[in-house]
Length: 320
Image (cartoon, rainbow, N blue to C red; front, side):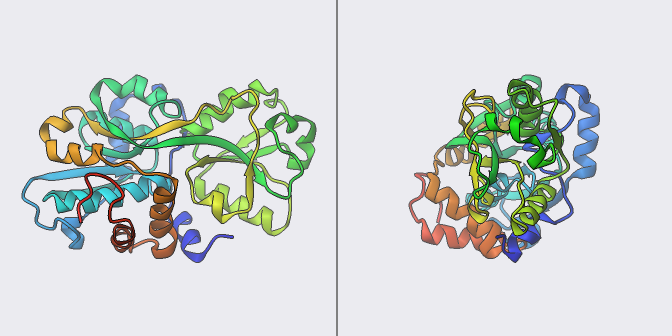
């Protein structure tokens, strides 16, 4: 079950995660995305909080991320620490959807997206904005999208859902409407398995999905949800991934650091540090757990300090 820290993290005013999105990225013109970035974002930074790099004279680097997507949350605070130690002032820009984040990155309003899924899950955004975005390297090699159920549910494969629609009230609970996970589920998985006539994909937010999952498990009821790996909820809840025999949730992909075009030329030492970050399952899992659960909201910098102390040689370019 989720701890109080987990509950707090996922019931914060949903700035909207977007590992799933919403309308297709092509339906919103770029000027509107720019407005969304300005209105939906909430900025903070180590210059305001006295974190690492306070008063850095190399310039300011803006990190853009969605707080409810805890892969980006965790790596954003890791980068804040590391870039601060290089002498940069780091500004943290939170957003509510992936579309505005990709637009802001392409327009230069954001310098780095710390944990992007550009190969498959967010490919449509890269098709739209990729010419103005620079790949700074991948840090994790086995990310994937899943459909999950509680472990006590006696089905093991997505292709068993059709015959059991009544047990699930014809619903699969998803996350943000604009997330890549939402698009993959709605447009590929449901029709591919012939479920689009039997199931509704219920979208709202990551927090709302986790609340539904938590309530269902407490009552020992059947429920199906959209999840992804790596994500702390897979360990916090007693769930299992359903087999995907047709591969319609997509192949495993890498998680990348993306920069606005020209980032490496403008900040070569920062780009070199970022390119050296490679995390295995244990390293990533411990980082996310410390940031999201053990320390929680408002103590992310302390969580990163603790992680660096526990993992003094996690990656080749690490700054102590």
